[in-house]
Image (cartoon, helix red, strand yellow):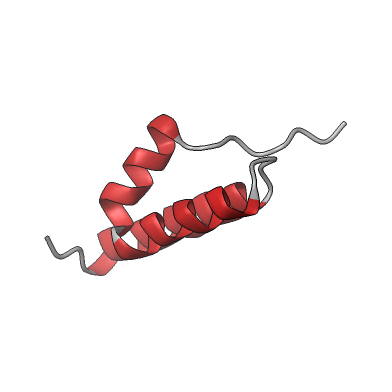
Length: 61
């Protein structure tokens, strides 16, 4: 599946947001690496999987 144009830009923005959220989460470093690899290797499907089952970013109070 190939996403181009505005759709590709939207997927890129969502993937960057997901990666930043993974980096800010409280999970172990190994899990962070696996989530980031999944998002980078499968941009659209990886984002959807992360959205459903991924670690949430840490809440700063």
